[in-house]
Image 1 (cartoon, rainbow, N blue to C red):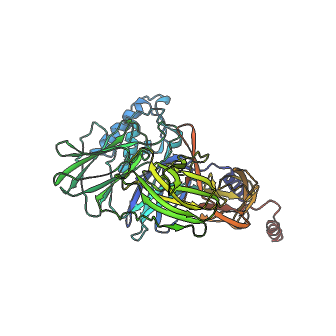
Image 2: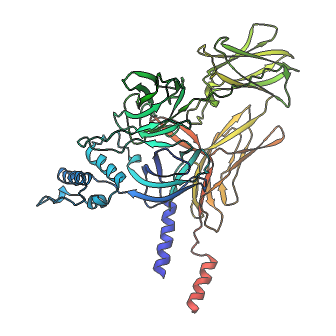
Image 3: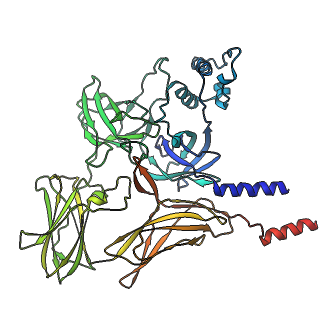
Length: 590
């Protein structure tokens, strides 16, 4: 009995010191509502995976099967395995005879190597690629070395959109990766097949009114191709999702997968081509009109013909439906409750937008443009002048930021101006594009406000696998706005006890130690953390944005927001726990 108690305690303690699993990619990147599919998940620290968390009961894990670490395979054994796989492809499951007098160093032991005939089609494909395709050490990143095959089911009424997907085991939780549920049917590229086998006929996909999602991975030097049947003279929208799946690659330059897409007709003529969406989005989005009804091919590759297992993508293609235009507001109005908002776009013809506002009395105001951070193509320049004059009072362009938040941080492109108005009157704010462009995608919002000292707080990790026995370190980044220089205090839910949770005046980053404060085991569950401060005599309470910190191209650090914090609390009874002592006494008396 003592041995069992000791092993349980040891297992619990080891889980506290264990390393979090890491998800490098999920392929394919999503699932159609109402279907069940198998996914390859690559990453690191995948020992004894227990499950996945999506934050929704509409998505369920049916099965997790870890792919064994496939060892370096000597030539003799590799040829034997490939001969066995070729036989299986022809319908012969029996293992060929092994060579005689095999040297010890010419044979490796592995569960898949011993039972090739029991592997399914997906598993055989993984094994064949491993045995046939040479691995470049620069592309074989340790963070992508392990794999698991996970079967996931999505309910028919599952909400369409993006979910945070995390994997967990007894020692930790991975940072989330985006996982998409679509109402469009999804089609995967064919499984890997050795070049010496006859090629299977490529499937042709029909693009219905609902559209279709094409899923794939780009390996070194690859160009993936899909065949589609399209209606001539109909307009289609093609959208690639890649950067959103893996926004930052830490050990590559450029530090992200940069896809290029071409659409060809049945004769090989180029119908459409797409590279970057705009000057700051690398994922192509474009419309095209097929010249005739028939078969077309979509080809996709990395712009530099790089490739790796985490170069995962999806291509959404559907008939184009025009969206509603952005309503412009340029009301002649004064500030209400200290804030006035305008919205509009920089037209291609005028190359600028202007809006007037009234300053009722002298004093400081802040003018802030929201454009790039909301997905606009506008690289805004903000100019301030009097309504009765063409003379420029002030002009603002990019903002220098110390913190980069988002999959493609663009907030630094949105001007923020501070100006002390010396006299009341009518003023004009003019918005132009730095490169002189304009159009429907060059939309903006302008906020004119009285000084409102405030702050935003971001974490550098979003998952909390914590216990009551060991401090768990969390870093928080404070972004101070409109001159806020007060104290910021973090507020945790009751299950969490914290140390060093107060950022004093001027502090922009703190390291907080937290512990699990409950005596009950906690399943994975979302939680909220808040930050509190005082501005102009009023209490400010902001929800902390859950983020995970990633490195890009060996240098830059970025914060990628998660949908929520994820807590898993483990309570470990101390050796002097009263209840444990009482139980021991009862057992002794018996």
